[in-house]
Image (cartoon, rainbow over all chains, first blue to last red; front, side, top):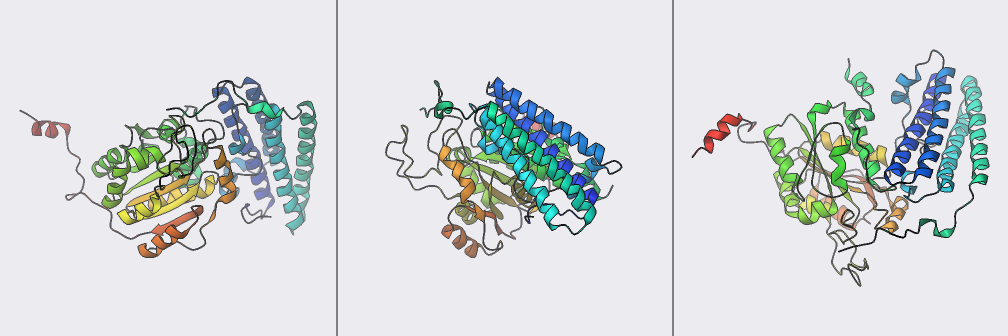
Length: 174
Length: 278
């Protein structure tokens, strides 16, 4: 696990971190959807809102699974990444006003793969059998998400190289 | 409620306004906004005690997107506005948001003298080496070989070096951040706000529209190799010899901040009116 990642010392920490990962992903997809709305790319608004909704379902499921653990209250204290974003946050720097569903799904795939790697690293490094068992469950879920995004990508093939060409581009002006 | 509990109770979303940013998708300023709200939450600052002052430009839209007091001022004059505010209302946390055009060209003179005065406030410049809002003119930090229709053959001008200039002019805290590291930037902002005197934080914030080449910055930035110093001569040498991508706190001075001669200068409007009576 990278030194940037939060320390998972208990099952409660694990749930809080898992909750935070999904909650951050929801916020990030909503932000990207807002950006696309501002820049009149309705197709991408729909894609990012769908991704947000999917992550929201997963977030709520983790909260339900956590039972008596108040993950909402615990997350700000234990689930912090010292640098960069949390694993499932799509890279804002890769956004473009003319991006296509393929680009959005590639961002989503990268996020799911980072989350998968994160939970895998917990499975591989924890000495606590209960944390390990729970983290294995998260690994399976993230693997399912990776597979799902791969399937979605088959429906949205890579766009032509000219995808970013704009008939009225923002050009330097005096 | 303890301080730690208060910090946990404050969320970055508490400092975000309902207005949606209109920056270009991919713009570094989205991350800077996140860094601001995370820093305010970490400090558990009451929203009514924060004022974000700005000038003109993409980065200067920042106050609209934050849930606190804001002043979207005139081009290049944000530091003058902020200095007046901080001197008259020293209990407020005053943060200034600017860009390399607004801050180093139009507001260049204010920058020098704000550093000299060392008033206790934080100056954040989002540097993308271009005038983005007005569509791509070279700014003071643009590289001399930047060759476009507006600067055929490049500007041929030596870029402005804001960190060295801030140091030479008397800034009491100097840091460089990268927008793509919002947590690291938030931590630096927390320290900048807490440090007494004039804190200057330059944030490399790519303009993906007019400087798409700046996307590579995320691969170029790296942590500063040594801990910050309070020795200005040492800091000057380090900053002058780095590659421009050292990230972190580079100088932490111990100069006493400016204080008005008799404490706060605030007075009643009616008293001021008497001074101007004919």
